[in-house]
Image (cartoon, rainbow, N blue to C red; front, side, top):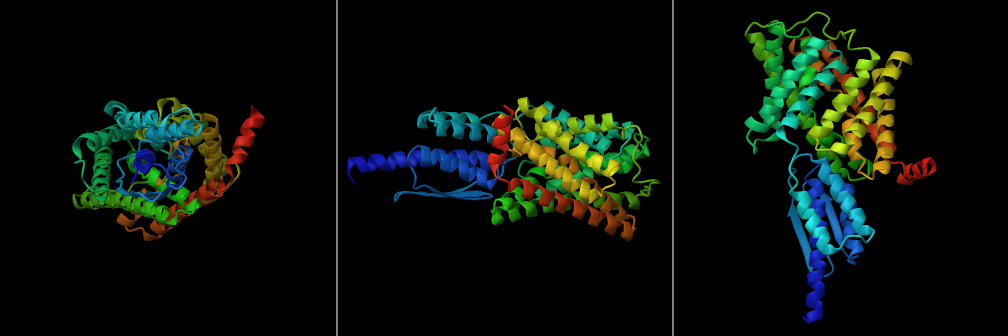
Length: 420
């Protein structure tokens, strides 16, 4: 091999390694498969490596380029840091515009990789606020919200400081849901809160796998079927683990003589049901998940607006239009995804930053709890009813996300240009 061939091979390897590094950061921090592939292709093509081929799975990247480069990299999911996804996405666009050299891109990727997570106190506080807000959304009283606030704070202290880093996801979610359920049962017994169901629903919300659920649907919409079904299966396993933890705690409590049957179990509180409280709760709760999912701080308000848009739509449909829960969830999902796509174009940011958090008020977390609750107290008819309603709401979310995700992106860009 002559010197020029060696030089070309070295250049190709540098470009491909830069592209793979960008894809790895995105994949291990919660990006969709198609966005990872698009980003890697954009970087490679800009630097003149048109022969690069990237095959991305949910936990790995297979790469080949020219006749001399191939790479297989296993990439385990490290946790959701949407800030990193947004920064790499922005970097790839700057590379595509020719304002960032290969050396500068490598340095910037290393900086993004080493970004510190949000401070523990911020995540703990966000967990508490999110739990309290969602307790209000699902009908809890102010006392219930306060109990959920405490439980949510204690939950995330356990997540960050107590659980071993290498514990399996299934075991961790079972233990965490057992912990918050036990806390809420104890709170109920000592008179701290009056609606055990609403307290538990709010407290377990931080465990809901919103990233895997939403990205799985988006991957399916983009015909990445392997990754889509893998991520949805992962989300379903987390849902099952949460339900198992709640059920185990309830069974243990009943063995200890704790009375689990509550009057008016699904009654909503009149004070927190008013529009201003519901809107504020949706804003705070969605923004809190922006913190937990590592969204950039300047996007917290925009994330909250997406959640509010969807939740207002849901309330209008159920309270004013007489729609069923499934119908309202479907229409509200359409609104969340549309608003998220407009936000993404306006802010030059990946749509998942807004969509994952904005969809949270619509995810049937309450359905998981009530189905488990009715099974434990042996009211199987009501368990079947609530379980089917939760499945219907889930299907409505899936269909809504797929429909709007399938729309061409230029529609939203044209509207933006018209508005400006």
